[in-house]
Length: 185
Image: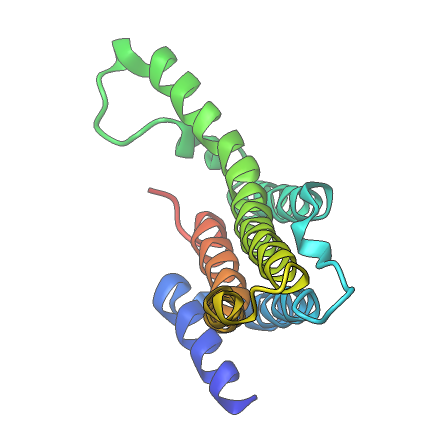
């Protein structure tokens, strides 16, 4: 737990600086929540809730709504300046605002979709290989089935790492998005 605490505190400090330390408990809770749900999905007959796009999209949408509200609370209408890059010609402003708005909305989709897709992909790969190994065993090919079972052991180890890495990536991106509530461009 101390190692997790230090790593998440480092992520928050590196991306948000001293003023962003108030977000540390939030980011730590998100990390622990997602990591535990991902790890829960590694147990037999348990489906990971983070493999559902509705759950991850809801989490990412609520984070982006919070970021937007905090940005407006902190900077009032100046928060809208994140939609226009500094030093851009005024004639390109309408096009740049449109592009930046699409980019801001895409954050919600990519944050949730990335987590659900990576967790689902690992489970799908494991299910395919375990079905293949079971078919080989049921057909009497015991020696040949050792290779898929050995691969399944390595995929299980990989899935354990992916469960924690995806929680870390989600928290890292959350801290980057929270950076908009501390300092504008």
